[in-house]
Image (cartoon, rainbow, N blue to C red; front, side, top):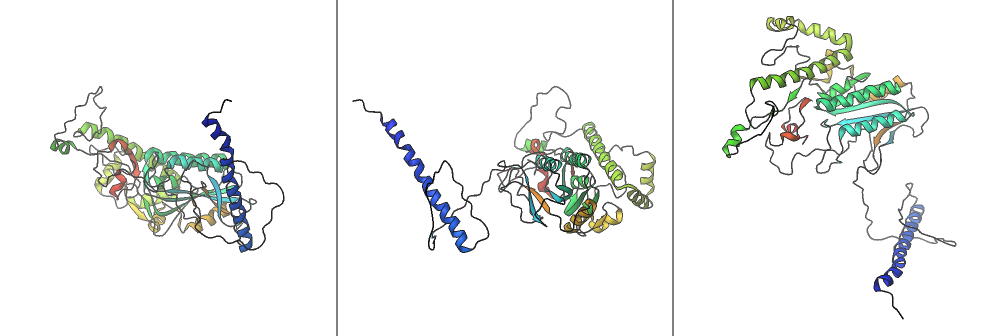
Length: 412
């Protein structure tokens, strides 16, 4: 007779191998469940079983179950496994009466995935948009608190986040309160001005209303290594801002004009959002202007050849403490995150015990309102960072308070 090939004989035995592990998994799941009941544990033990399992007849467990050895748990590190979902961290767990959602804005704001050690690899702009869309579709969320802890970021990325907040307020008409944590500068403060109220810690660093473009001249450095750029280009200014050669005065003026335009946009937003109180502060500060500064104002703010413009202290890019920011009208009051939550609750007409939720993926912990998504950029695997070499990966114009040199290349 014809004997079937070995491959077919192995295939016939395959179901036996497939069901054996499932039976073992079933016994482990039963043991774990029984162990939880017998030990009085309030937290249920969940077991994931793959494939099909059929159990017939009655099954009972009598007596004590003792488990020895080690139990290994695996945490998924795929940040795309689930969409963001509300996780209650404070207050009642019911959906009735409305909830307060905390949207966290931490670290550098750039429209780019953050790849690095211990990083979730999230794009801050995309993640923010996903959270806003969840709130737009979730009628149980009645107020939003922006928890901002950032020195700023890209001009466009910051503006995109601010635009999303403006759209949310139009779509849902719910109160938005910004709370500035350790740092609320540059693009972080720009975002905060789109909220209904701004709260800052007394020790927060606030402000940084300015624009910066990181550019380098590496012509001499490259020449030391006998590296001579030979660009083939059509369009004299196509390599505008290149670190490979010295920037011409005309080219610098072009970039300066762009920076001034972005700065004007920032200033206009702050003046519009902060209203009369900020105008009074500007008038007060203007009393100490020098004759040179007054002449600059009389010229309707025309740009000087070197790009310098005088706006007084508020808009020259400097930073302030939270208490100073209150006096200047940049923020409404000093307080803490709890105070911001309470203000948002009052504005929304919610109860004192209204649930507070964070929007998180299932592999992102959410134990308290201060938890931060691990999302740190890494510019290079090498410990050496030479300014200019990774210029193509850097953000361009930045709303960024920049005392830290690593921010120069952190977007790479």
